[in-house]
Length: 257
Image (tube, rainbow, N blue to C red; front, side, top):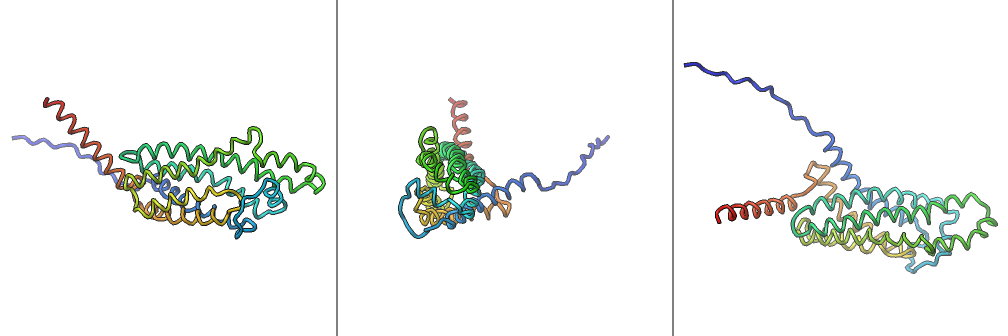
């Protein structure tokens, strides 16, 4: 009797996927940094305790010669990139199951709104830092044109589309509630924070409170990712498994019929 010796397969050492680890840590950092930047930006606004809607001229004069506020606006402009990361991450949690459409539609709304928020900060905020280099006489002569810009005349009206950002995140929060992906308090906090952060200029105390709510809602997810947890979460995996079982059952029924 002859014996056949099978060729030995070289053993491979499973190294951690460094790219996946960097992706998890980067997403976790974005989940924390995004609301923190908003908190800093809103806290730097003068008259934080007052609650009233400001006229365009008041917004212009408030930014005039205020480098701290303009730095905060520059950070918010950059923060729009982190907002896109957060929206895509929330959509990844809702790839299947009851909240799938909410994750997709809300994600599209949020990404588009983030782009228009960047346009808003570029047109209405970053330009003010450049105008600090001109003297008061020149600045006063430019004031009527600036009022037209801050009043969102002409094509500047498109920046109102930035409201799609908080509405999109709110839709995703509703999807998380429906899918049972997060604890109820966490999803409701995300929903409240996303809606309240849309408060208009002059109500920064409300915006600041909303940013705190977003931080409270997103921090558990950031910790989960930083510890090496799956970016999709158990709820979405369970939803996909249920869908797979339904498809397998339907296929078996078709074969036996």
